[in-house]
Image (spheres, rainbow, N blue to C red):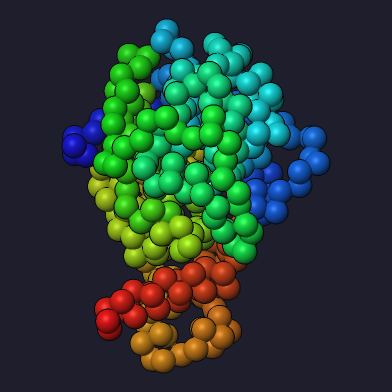
Length: 310
Ligand SMILES: [Zn+2]
């Protein structure tokens, strides 16, 4: 049941979190020697906190039932994450959701899996159990202790710290195993990498992601999320529903530009050369530059056009 979700929230500004600090560049071309990662904790609303470090944003529910965590960045910094969790009540979360399989969201699983029940969509477990390729990098299967213990197809709820924590799978967006988590009492939603706040998104076509699917998912979420909810994106600062609407609109408009050029039989190189209008400049200043976003849209729709022809 996706309708009628009421989520309530207090806003904490975290505009000071720099994109350089949390960018995917650091995630996929990780500086494995980096020792200076600082975990920054911010209260979002109600029971919910967000931890910024190196990798995908971590959501935390803290209260009388203990700790529930969403995503866990990298194994290398698990001790630092634990120290921050301890300040919120316990360094051992009872439950850990993975919003999707990417290593900047699941890297800590082999550590946290010793104490926590890990939950994720079926495809997350499948991809974590087998070798994968992301942006040309070969990723080895994760240690068995780090695999999700409980998996689901559509979603599930955990009743924790006085509220329903509702995990809902959204099909083929960022990957084919994306989960969005609704903290229905605290009025907070963790959107994983379906939401890159204020930046062009990474859509992982190799992992079953789809630009059309992502746009559809965000459209659904815009309808479902209460106007006063606080949103935790996979990357970027805590945001509002209005920010999500702007992101949705930007995805639609930039995708239309590329698709119209494709319909005129423009080559990928020609489309890249023409680029996007100036007003989208800021959106290309994160990990995914305008050229890369154009390429992703082009490839995503080339696949679907080929499938239609078959
Ligand atoms: Zn991701």
